[in-house]
Every structure is written in structure tokens, then in C-alpha cells.
Image 1: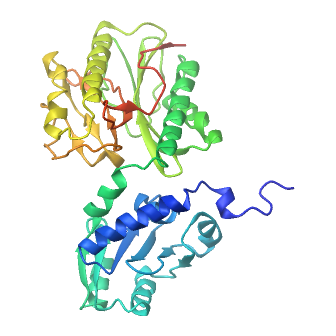
Image 2 (image 1 turned 180 degrees about the vertical axis):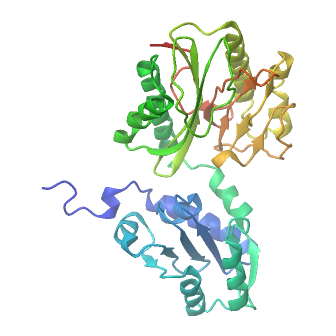
Image 3 (image 1 turned 180 degrees about the horizontal axis):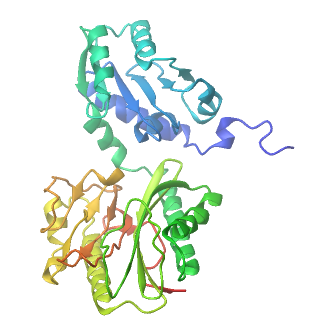
Length: 389
């Protein structure tokens, strides 16, 4: 049989069990009932985790999901020709092209479902286009539109047992990227060459690109202290250091890893100290990643950075997409965001100690699962500072 012949979308793409989706739908609808919502409306972009959570559809373009408290949901997609692939992915039977305007199609569906005089939750009012929201209000003056994003995302953030293998698979893919860097980095490579090593390490294993931030500098005369968001034409040489921040996704589930790599010789004294302090900070935070731990306790656990004369430039602890929460150390620019950990949440610990003159720095960290015994790393690549090339 030809590969893929006769197979359905259920066979071609990863998919959770019917019981898992029933659990998600039940949890969301219970939350809707508490707020007396008749439906929720999600406006998503490429890869929207909110749309994916309820439909299994990994969007490649703008999309919407209308999810009623009673009845079946509808997915609206941007491109007509994306329908066959979207339908193969989605557990939602009703997947439609929304035509030239999403609002026209959504308005008609709200009217068809007799929701024109109802209460509808938006996920999330902060991300929906202002013009779209104003159009919905004009079309439905009797509808009470309310924010439902925090309640919805609180459900998503606590991972189920079926979700954990997806996150561990993502961790494995980031491990592959780090292993490839350790194996292939050598003097003479450009930053573009370095990125090509990262991409090639996981694509053939089902990974999808997330953020791939790197920076290179000379350890004896550093001029970059955090990973940069876009590569430059800089070429590495003996005595260079490569600092990284890498996210790889597996079917909508992402983890993030941070490791430094020395080129051609052992790390200099300042970089070895930065690494040791970062690792101590990581372990201090990891050990307290237990249910009930608060933002204040997490920040207090990072004090080793300031105690050693360093400061930070990036968040030290974050959730999905760098938010929820975004916490810095006591000397960081990040404000205190109130947060309390729950079992089976996944967060990233990423100490970024830097010298106060903003010259030398590195990033070291991993995604961890919150458990009763502390954070469980979702990666297996060791915490080390390898010499490459």
C-alpha cells in the first residue's frame, strides 16, 4: 500500500483520546456555566494553542472557534485551500472557510444558533483585533461580550497525563538540537551555520520550529550578553562562546532549553563563574517548583545571582510563550506578577546572569513539570559547558 493511502486524519496526525477531549470540553463548559456563558469565541493566529486545545487543529493562518455551552463547535479558517488538511487534523467536524471576512461568517453562525441575545466569552479580549470586536458589538447590541481568557487558560495550564508525553517529546527534540551543536560547532561557522545545525537536528523527527535565539562573542572580550533574536554574519573562532535559547514544538506542545557552548578551549574564568551561578540558581528554583509555591518564593530563590555580583536582563521564570508568569530576579526590570504553582503546570527556569557592565552573560535552563517533589526537567541533555571543535 502506498504510504498514507486509505488512512484517515486520525491516523495521519497526532490526536488525543476521546476521553481526553471529553475531559477538556467538560472542564471548559463547567467554567462557562459558572459565568453563565452561552458560548465562547476564540480568535486565533498561526499555531493558536487555544484553538488547538479544543479542536486539535494547528492553524497555519488566522482562525476562529465558536464553542457553545450546548451543541457542537465550529472552526473557521482563513484560506479556502487549507480545508482538506484542517479537516484531517481537527476533531471538530464543522471546519469552514470563513470567506473574505471572518466577521460575516461568524455573525451568520451566531444568528443561526440563536445566540444574538446571549452572553458570550471572548478568549481573549486582549488579543482579538479591535476592528473585529467593534464589528461584533455593532452586529449584536444585545449580546454581552465578556473576557474568558484567564478562566480558559487556567484550565489549559494544568497538564493532563495524556499531554505529558507530548511535552517530553518536545524536550527530546530540544535535546537533539543541543547534542548536534555540541557535536558540530567549530571555528569558522557563521551564526547562520549554527542555526542550520539546530533546524536539521529535529525536523526529520517531527519537530516544528519555535524560537531559536543565539548570540556569539569572544570570551576574552565579550560584547553580547543575551541570546539575540536574529542571527548576524559573525563567524566564531577559538575562544568564542555560543549562548542559546531554543524552543522546539511537537504537535503544539513546546519546551525550551538554554545551554552555552565554548569553542576550541575551556570557558574563561568569568564564564565559568556565570555558569556555576546560573546552575545554582536553576537548582534553587527547581527544588521549590511544587504546588503552592508563589512568585515571591521563586524570586527569593534566585538571590544567588545578586549575591555573586551579577544582575539579569531576561526573565528567570516563565510560562507559555514567555508569559504566565514572567518573573525576574530582584534586580531585574520585570515587575512582580502574582502567581501560584499547581501540580502538572509546566514552566521554564532560565537564569541569565550577566555582568553589570552588560558585556558578559549566558543563559542556562530548562522546562520543568511542577510536582510534589519539585520541578521535573523535561529534557535529558546535561547541564554542562562543553568545549566544541
